Image (cartoon, rainbow, N blue to C red; front, side, top):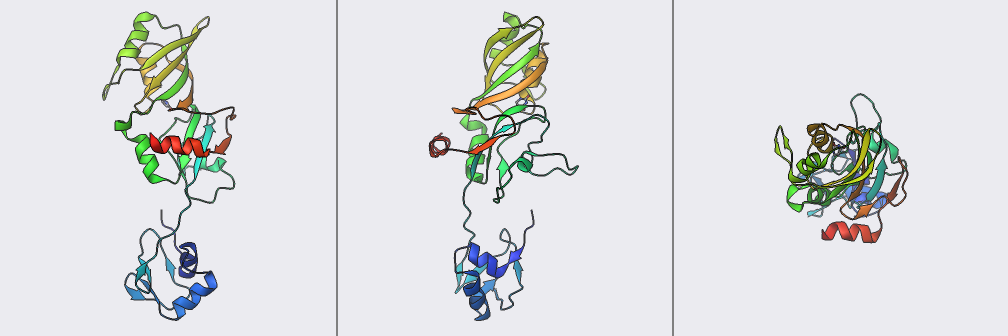
Length: 239
Ligand code: URA
């Protein structure tokens, strides 16, 4: 995303000096942008692209890390923006000024625990397959899967792009023509739980993610969000 800000604002945000004092630095010829001295106060820079130096020293924005836990409601997209103007999880974060993004993805019609942050390193770690972080889903499915169906889910199901890793599956409830399953997987393939259940002939009627690793919603209602606790952040970083 392209984002240009005034040079004096950039310097203030980088913790170099106040905005007023930064203007003086610029006017005194002590600031370079991409190797050239800039003295005009109106100059704009893109913090992701331009290299800014003061007295020859590189300046970088000090970005405050933000860690949010949301109970994503149904009908909302797990993206930062949508070209069609549909509601996104970021629209729900009223009052957050930092540029944050969701970690991984929940389908539009899936509800549940979503991590939102501006910490790219943590996001990379949480979504990288090698870390195998368990994600726990509650799936209401059509019909009642028998032992053979459950074994197939547990052993891994052949989807078009390959076999899924073994899943932990428990039946929590049997209704008249539905069942509620707890399904724990560590992969993050597109629509994975829905496709796994479809493959055994018991399509998902309702899907909720209740845990990522040991992180839980702890009473957050759909659409609600909160900052993570220090303990939760430490837990994720140490995974
Ligand atoms: N599996 C799905 O099918 N959908 C989700 O949103 C997450 C996991």
